[in-house]
Length: 260
Image (cartoon, rainbow, N blue to C red; front, top):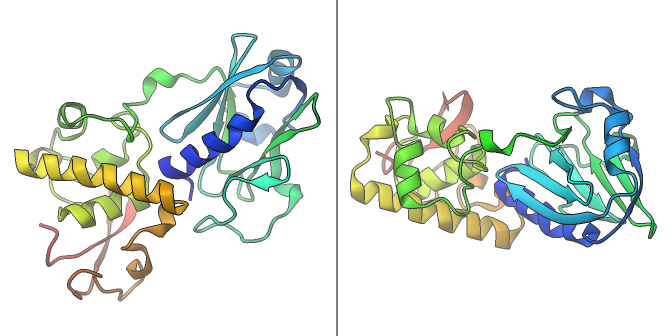
């Protein structure tokens, strides 16, 4: 599923479009257009515009246009970015492994002939004109210990629920959260404000390491915990049977022996 690591790979892939002039905009699926955005608005804002930059804020990919508009691209669980004939990522956990152009929900055609497409079989992503980026928290790749302490590690809600809250820290999804907490030895259900200073530093350190390794290895499905995230799976560290439960509204795997 696209999380912060995947969207960073998408951003790098989308840089092929920087400097290109948009010849046409296609958004035939009304369901895929979010927060009141319409296809005529996208066509008017994008046609003839030059892509000035490809940016990322958490799970949101933003294309800055020369018209001063911004295209906000979201990918849900199953959306992939295709530029030209090449997908940024070929494999997504929990998505169909078929590759059907009928699943193209949005695309740009550039004057050079290059195309940029979102292919999303389950229509869980979306496109928005001029998205509100201020409602997102600091990016997971750059969040500081101080920001983590002040924005995330507060209140009695479960630690994992806080990590998944995009308004507090942007870019952490289910797999990143489970891998980070497993490596840091922290129980996902612990109250967010219960960590001591050493645990805060450990959480921050492992978050950075997880994101770095996922980015290098090609996505969130490449974690060391991932092969064991099945019913009856055992902890890769100590062999204890993993605990499977719902935390923060998401299916969660953790080791009851070393995550405390």
